[in-house]
Length: 120
Image (cartoon, rainbow, N blue to C red; front, side):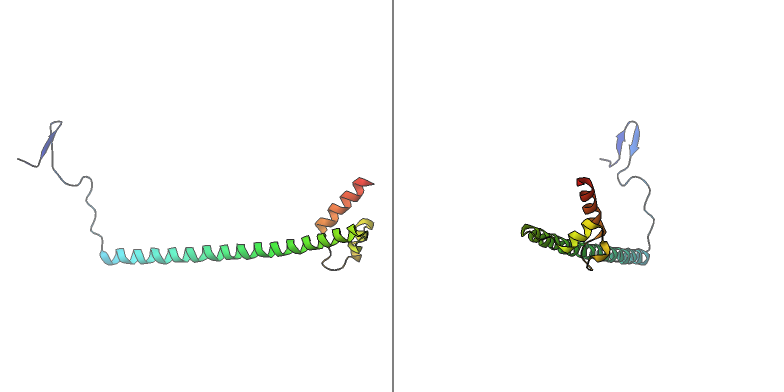
């Protein structure tokens, strides 16, 4: 029999449909592939650098928050013993210049001032 098929009155020949692919130079194709791989590795390197910087900044933030938490724990234990820490006294009187370095942040002083002003 013949390999041609009759469909709706038209003779169809077996094989691929559409345009035939252009002859691509093998060397050019390999070079494009290499270039694409180089770009992919560069993007990956940049992505990892960004993620490493992000992790280190988050770790620094965690350390700072842990130090602040430890300071608050010490303040609470001092107040449980009936002592008022000098940092809290300074916050309540509004003398922020008397605070020792690393005593408290401006964020906490605003919160403490808001609490003391709302109570009185």
